[in-house]
Image (cartoon, rainbow, N blue to C red; front, side, top):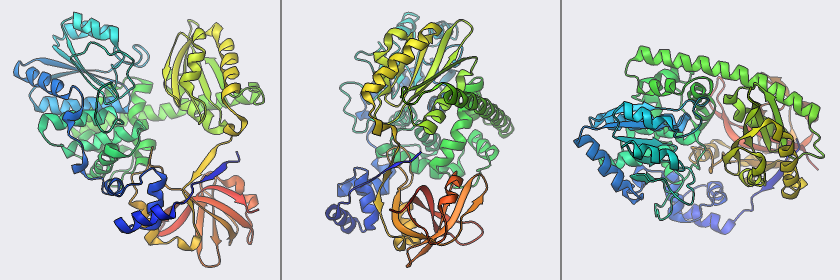
Length: 561
């Protein structure tokens, strides 16, 4: 699909100010400006991302209460139940809490709900479970902020509750002993975007009086996998944590790196997002997330390796199932969706595996650039769905407008989940598309490629590639920089390599450089020697059997006008 290019306006004056004050490349200064980093101190903090830049954990509302309650549990030899969500953030948060609590000599019991049997978050069964296990204190991580009835049941069972959650709170809060969430009212904590694992790191910092840097590896994985903005404290945690992965002391993490064939490599957010994260999540998608938790808690290298192999098997099963459902869903799109009338894709079928619906919705959204709702209908006639959106269509607001047809729903602008009765699917589809007609202009249905700046090919060299690397780690809130160059000349015929990968050379008569486009085989007919083209790209390093040299990793190709 043809993309709109949106090139950021340069700010030469501010660029010069930052460049001179910090002795940085002018292009790096412009990249900082594009990311909203305009102050000299702010820019310096971003580039150094030093552990010393972490805030005082006691600035978090209720941190003093939580620390005091945990200290009481240690003194009174109480049992603590750690209740975590089944995704990467919940599992790693549970493992981090286990580490600090057991180090303090506290007996810890774990509970992660089953995605299909229990659903998300605290459930009514956990109060009875806590009573049976003689639990005095439950700590909920990555969930609980809106669990009003469940917290009341726990309190009635004599179990106090601490909630550590980064999700948006309702206008009221559960009756917990302490709630650690920087988004709650009257919390003046300077950084609002920590994932739950980041909040657990703050709790550990408060309990120990310092940051335990050996724990930052798991926190970094959770922060990247949960797609929270990689600036402020998140940038510090991820930059420091990823650098420690190669020498991690966590035997389960070492086994996972080994099984995933990335042991010994420099781990980047790419490896977390596309290799580690899916394997950790696969346990909860296909069976129980306790497998992933047991992996990170294992002290036996052989047991850790066996658990890592189980995750690998689950991930392959997930990939196969996901691929089958994506193929079915795309076939339904081609058969049933009239894009002139439907701006939102709503697909349903009996028996689709609920553990992969969100991934399938993302794949459909990426291909067709339409908000997408994927519904799996069970034998009782109730559909469970995951939804993904595009820029300009606030999914949660749209679902609120369709609430009369939904049993439950929740989420945010870009992603959501819902349940719906089978007989309500067609009227829901009609209504959400009616809302989309009002909310989505035609131009919003064309994907936009955000480009940091236009540069000449001659400016690309190892120095620039290295200074761009100083902007790492890239991810949400700090995307890998995209540049463009216009009117460049194709030097060679393109070669198709591997899986639909295009490779050729381009020149601006002063500099010649290789360009590679993954999944861009369809452009091969456009590219002939001496043709003039415009390229959008990231600057990467070609390290194949030689000294590293800069290359262009293409994001889009156009014939020059």
